[in-house]
Image (cartoon, rainbow, N blue to C red; front, side, top):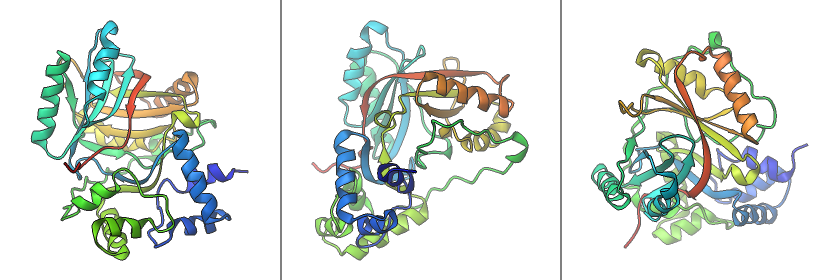
Length: 329
């Protein structure tokens, strides 16, 4: 039997209610009280197990972003990581097992600002930065299934041949103030959309309608509870990168994205000669052996053993928070 915490985390990482009293609606579905739901979410946020309750935006529909990497001498890793983490445009910063051992995500309002941030980081660290912007996503930020202690299931190659869904780039309209208001999460109050409306000087219903439109357009990838894997017991993860033929990348991206042990899957550009890989996926597990078992089953089940690849296990987590798209000065 799932505990209340497990059910809340499994059922509400997406499809969060767009109604005036969403936490009361959650409570009814969980057979508990609104007060218990709010208290539990507050405790989970305070412990770090939940980052926020709110929106996850589709990359490059709200501002622009890139995954970046730096090859830091081991004796300078902590110093360089501190410089990068101090940058407000950086929202994730991890050590990984590779020559490129420092990986971080940079988000900005537009391409000019993004390029300037990368240039500033190169100047401040004294090292060149590898920038790998998203080309296409196959499975990204759709929630994290809380069942990786079970054996991951590998979908057979023959059963997964659907074409990739085309990438959407919907117009944002005038949503900047709303994005700024929700980028750190919804307030944990009985009527969160009303509280946001008061802040923005508009009605509760306008906030609900606008969020619904952004979900329908694909600007918001999901609305719900955003978890932190490490604090919930999934203490190992690896970024697996593959050098696949360009003509097969959509097929393989869809296949990899459908595997139970894959939490993210996307295409990024090669940067020859330093970086030959074009298909990325993230695998999370309770320990290192769990992650390796998932990768081995996945490679075998999808006939990927002969495809050049590299496994970059994560080490220290220097920074992790939601992206900041707008900041008032």
